[in-house]
Length: 170
Image 1 (cartoon, rainbow, N blue to C red):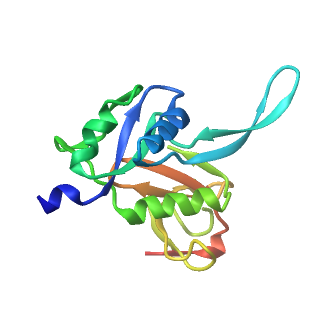
Image 2: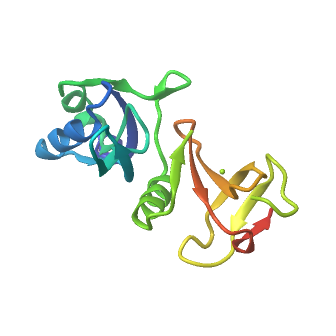
């Protein structure tokens, strides 16, 4: 059936702290996988070190068709596909593209962040720069100037700090 061969992005739950390893394993099996990683400074008692950590703990994104789902589920550490209304949730390409763009640009990101006349819950759009056209919601009206970009398909949000001048209300 042709519909079975259409590849869509999906999110999978994975065991804690195995995101990078599972992503590599899936790629080795010929499955397109994406683990958004952010660089962060970690401090131990004797040193500081820049490390790459998953932005969304417990999630790996895979681009599969229906016939590849078993191959994904047979991978050690994969818990299950993220579901919505009982069906495996499909993530729109634009959401993955936005996530990749935010990560690649190296903005300060937090998973779970605008002063000016905005208030919490306002929908805004970025008006210029490389993130032009991305929409999100205001989640912080204090000094942090953070916008939250919602990945609707899996109910996850990414926060990014942006200057107010780049935003307009929708």
